Image 1: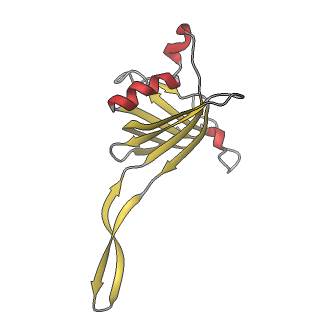
Image 2 (image 1 turned 30 degrees about the vertical axis):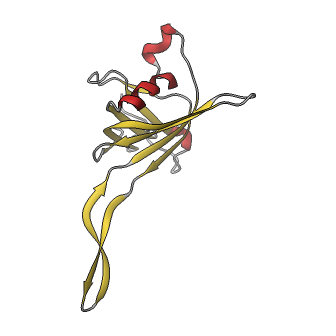
Amino acid sequence: MPAAARTQTVIMGKEIVFAIEKVPGSNNYINYLCTTSNNITNPGTTTDKVACFGGTYTVSNGDADPAAVKLETIRRAFASADQATNFADSELWPLVVSGDSRNVKIYFGNKAGDQVITGKGFFNQQEISGSTTGAATGGVTFNFSEQPTVDVVA
């Protein structure tokens, strides 16, 4: 069934979904639940300074560093019966330590024509915070190892 058409122009933060291919090569992406913030940094092309008789100019040198995503979450743990269909924060620790690659998709909405970024990379810089009141929180950075592809929801 095709996706519904977008009727409003604003994409809400809660519409941004980070999905992980939990089992490498399975092509089965599981939404990383309880992300409270998805901050994506796309550095774009790097620049060079070019000096000539007319002055000094800044130009793109054609090299582009891959994007990174900083995820902030509410920590969750799932019962064993629910672990196959969910991705828990505890599963990040071994991925951060090992540097193992994972395929991910980032959905900027679920309406027809909304952007989807797909790529491969690794997790690092995991943070875990807990206070005496409220939910435990955390964060991790996902680094694309190469430029991701950009597509749209069909």
